[in-house]
Each structure stands twice: as structure tokens, then as C-alpha cells.
Length: 441
Image: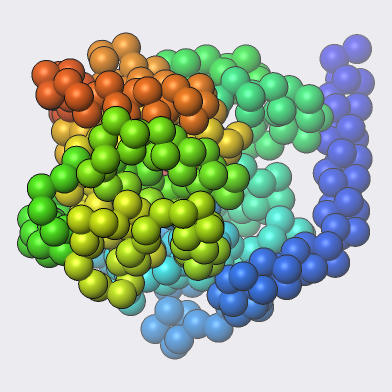
């Protein structure tokens, strides 16, 4: 009986993958249309399409590394930042191992190039189609694929294994919402998860969700989150002084960081209420995507607020109510001149962005209810009093006003966040050890 079940399961897996590939093929024209649509607002999406379809041109030196590459896949900015300490340690300890770093978004691509330049080979990840993945793997023949967090694609994993590469998921997180999604498509997700050599989970709760999906105990280890490994750059103090010098006078400063479409309206409503109690309050508003900088500036002006733009490098007068952070790579500096932080992506259902950066700088942190990207970390921060969850613009305004009016509360929240970050260091070394243990020698 068992011998008949195994071929049946294998046939079902092949049928499921074939169906997936047919559907993906049919979706390709719509993917191209979506790229064109996104390129209207962000022209970078119109460039380097060949890479997305697996066509990569390498130098002679890079070609010589064929069969030796270590492939690190980070979807966008957040995953790229999380991967950065691991990449730096690999480059420092094993400079002979060539690294490919892939992303899916132009902002992620820009961040990788800013951080590493020519020290790594950076291209866009191929779309998860057998032909595009096959071309990519044929070009590089990587010996190890490290997927950051939970960007799992069936064909990438399947064909990487077919080519002899090992596959690990580093800094892996799996929210309850994502776990339910994988359960719905278990016929495709189950075989994919079974092919992964090792999963380095951020927390015990993430590991348990992977087990629930059928991942074997031998495949999982809890490493903690690399995102706790925040290295404040040596240039931060100089950058902080530069920004602080632009703010005329001593004013309370609230930052709304990495805000998403539909969220700025709520932030501005909260600002209007806060100004009734704190007339000299300054909001630093930093939209998540650079293609939205201009539209957000227009929105602020249309709502009647006095706006200054960081890109114009002009002083922020006492009459300025919103300072638009329309620059790249300065988020830590924006946090460093602020008194309280709201982290965006959380008042709309996009799962929250990095709450640890403001915590590492000693800021009280507020976030909305949509936290699935940082679910475990938000829970940890809230449990020690470093973070407060607000449900809407009204409770956001109340929380900002309350924290700014109470220096002791502000100090306690900030200190709790810094302690939590310090207490959770060590994930980088554990993740590094995991990666090195799976590099075929």
C-alpha cells in the first residue's frame, strides 16, 4: 500500500507544479503590464528587464566563479538591510566566496548598490518561471541559496536543488496570516518546504508555524532576528548635527517613518489634532517609496500644512509644520533628531516596517495594528513597554500628545527599547554559522 502511495504523491506534486507553471506563464503578460504601470511613477521599473527574465551578462572575472557562487536573495529594502551584516561578515571572513545578491524592487537594488558597490554581484531575481530560473541558474550555478526572511518561490527552490545547490531560509519569519496562506496551497507549498535544507527562524513562534506546515524538526533552528543587530554608522552623529542645524529653534519632533499610500491622510489628521495641544510640533514625514514624494508633498499642502522638503536643503522655519523626508539613506538620521517615532505600513494593511531602528536610538515607538511583518518583534517590544499600538488616527494623536507631554514616560519607553535590542544580539553569529555550515566545500 505504501509503495503505491509514494508514486501517487509524486504524480500529484508534478501535476501541481505543472498547473502552477501554466498559470504563471499565462500571468506573464499581466506582470509586464504591471511593470509598465509601475514605471509611470517609478521609471526604474522600466529598466533592466532582461535580468528579471534570467538574462545576465557577466564579466570574464565573474564567469570564472561559475559553480562557486553563494546566492543571497533579499526582496526589497527591508530584507537588504537585514542581510547587510551577514553579507559584510561573509565578505570579511571568506573573501574568496563570490556573492550574488538579488532583489525584486528598484529601491532594494539601489540600497544594495549603495551598501556594497562592486563588492558583490547584484542583479534582479528571476521571475519564478522554469525558463527564467533555468537561465539564471545556468549562468551562475550557485552552490548555496540563502533566502532572507520568507520569500519562497517554488521553481527557484526546486530548480536550485535540481542543480545541486543547498537551500536555507535565514532570518525566517512566518506570521499567522502567511501560515494560513501556505495551508490553503499545501499541495504546492508542502513539497517546496520539504526541499529546504534548513530554516533559521527568528523566534520559537515562527518555528512552530513552520512545523505546523509539515517542516521536519531536523530542518529548523531558532537563530533569533538579525534585525536586532543594528550597527549605528560612525557618520550618524555628523549627519544628526547636519539635520538638527536645519531645524530653527528648539521644537518637539515627531517622525512618521516609511508611510504607505492611504496612510499619510491619517497621519496628517493626527497632526492636526496634535497641533491644537502642541502648536510648535514638527512632523518629519518619510514616505516608503520615493516615487510618492511629490504626491505626498502636494497632499500636505492641500491639507493646509506648511511644508519643507529635505531635498531642497533649506532651513526648517518655526512656521514649518511638515518636513518631508524626500531623500534616500537618511532614515537613521531622521530618527536621531526626533523625540517619538510612528512606524508606517501599520495603519494600512501592509504589515508594518522596521520598529527596531528607532528603538535602538532610544525613541518611544508607536505603530498601528497591522504588524504581521514584525509581529514577534512588536509583541516583544510591547511586552517590555517600548512600543504602543494605536488603532487609528485618533488614538495616534492621543498617544503622540501623551508621550510628548511626559518626559519620564518617553525616557522609560526609549530605554526599554534599547535594552531589548542589546539583549537580543547574537542572531548574526548564529545565522552566519548556519550559512557557513551549509556551504559545500
